[in-house]
Image (cartoon, rainbow, N blue to C red):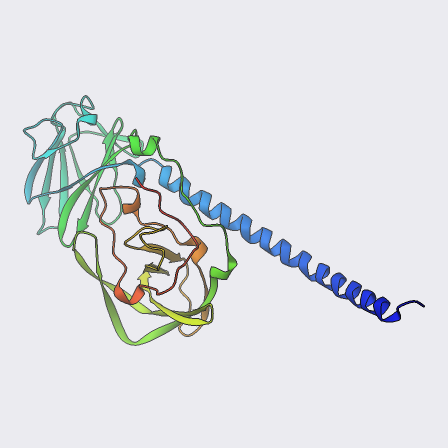
Length: 306
C-alpha cells in the first residue's frame, strides 16, 4: 500500500467529516427553526405597528384640565385638533369632563355627532375607561384617555396619517444566536421599586422583582427587570445606542416570569424600539443607569430616522 499514513489520515478525516455532517444537519435544522420563529415574531411586531390606532397613527397628545375640555378643529376649543381632521364632524365635536376626585372622564358629544366604540355607534354621553385603551372616534379620527402621573391626557390617532402610509418598515440586525443567552432571575431580598424617568422628565416607580444575570462574550452583565402582568419587561441601553439603535432605550419582553434563581432565555434578537422611535406623541422611558450595558448589543431592532 502506498503512503499508508496518508490513507489513514484520509480514513480518519472521512469519519470526522461524516460525524460533522451528521451533527451539522440537526444543528442547521435547529437554526432554520429559530430563524423562522424569529422572522414570524418580527413580522407580528411590524403588523402591530401598522395596525389601526397603532403607534404610527398617533397625531396628538393633549393634557386635560379638571372640569370641561371642549375639543375639535375649531380654534375656540380648549383642545384644538390638527387641521388634517377638518371636516371630520363639526368644528366642536364635544366636551370631555374630567373628575379627578372620582377618577372619571366623561365624554359629552355635540348635538348630531355620532362616534364609534369598536363597531358600536353611540351618541350623547359615555364614560371613557382609562385602565385599558378605550378607543372612540369617527371617520379617520380615534382617541382615548391615558393617565400619567395623576394627569389625564387625551391621546389622538389618525388612521390615515402620513407616518403610517409612508412607513418603510422596521430595520433589524441579522439574527445572531450569540445574543440569545440564558439568564438567571436573581430576586432582591426585599420588595423593590426602580425609578424610571421618561423623555420629558416624568418619574414613575416600577415594581422590580429582581435582576437578570447573564454572560456575553465571557463577561457577566445584569439588567433590572420590571414586573409586567405575568411576565418581565426590560428597558435597556447599550453601546449601539445613538449609532445604529434608538438613543434612549430599547425594550425586551418576557411573556412568562421565571421562578426565582432559575434560568430563562433572554433573546436580544427580539429587542425592539420604544414608541418614541416612531412617534412624537409618546413619552417613553429612558433606560435606568443600572441597565446601561457597557457592550454593543448588535442584535434586534435598529433605528430608522423618522
